[in-house]
Image 1 (cartoon, one colour):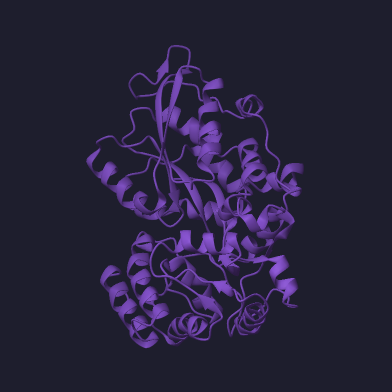
Image 2 (tube, helix red, strand yellow):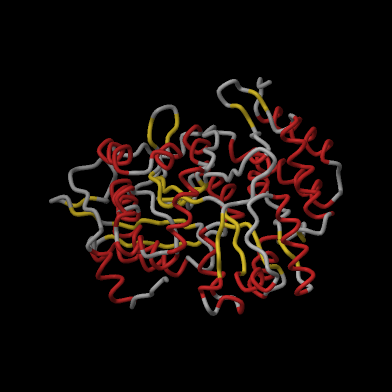
Length: 423
């Protein structure tokens, strides 16, 4: 069970975690004589509504260790963040010193020269002390450009009471899901699953479940339109036409959360970032009613994507020393343990999983093995760019606006436009 703490205790605890950064620097005005950090660090945070208040408190507690540094916290809606950050970095106008980047954005930003390389000593710590798959997401061409803040994947959230009343267990396969959904419908009149249909991240378990992937980076080949890809698009559509799932082509995340929290749907596929908000729903006033299981397997296997967020420093920052110190603080073990305790978010530091507040988090303990089995994405600069055309085609397929075959073919065409020269 998650437990909250008072804001004053939070500040006092996290102040101990702030990392000092001494020595001289070429940047103007950020380090005074004697090595004291000063100036302003602007942080663009992409966390959701249920997380942002906690992250703002944590961020601002950095000043307890560095009183001459002002942290300017800005919450940027995730959906707008990638383009907004790129525009700010490319123009240099009002650009943040630190960004919270989706793991799929780091290689893109680094390839464009937007990110400052992580200091050598910190990079060594990332390689030695962080989960290997998390550390990999912050690298580009062998260099480290971002420090992993949280790691995640997708799981099957389910309403324990609704499934128990229907006499069924959480489904282990997508075929079982149809039977489970039918039993829920017969007992309660409610939907079995709400499947998000307007975001390509939710397509990934379907294609992984058929033994496929979006691309083969090693061989520079597009694979979204091969047989496994076509079957994944068919699976998405079949879940809806069979009655196993309901979906919506617009504002899918909000609709999904609302349906699950209110009991209009017994199951949904989501990640650890959704736990805090889910607990706020009427169905989960008793937190014990929330269950999480592995994403149901397709015809080949169960597969969920590796996700998460990394923190990076803008290469054009006028306060790089303070910005790097802030990143080190925000990714410290103490802060990661606090985030696990308060928000059920998964740490990226290996040793954090040995701490009592992490061990006692039921949601973290479920998601950690799921993360260990998650499919690592191709850390290529074009990673984030692939998701927009994939989203378009996934939405068409799941809603019936396009056939699965045409959706897969169109996605492949758009991928090859982005990945010039790929097969």
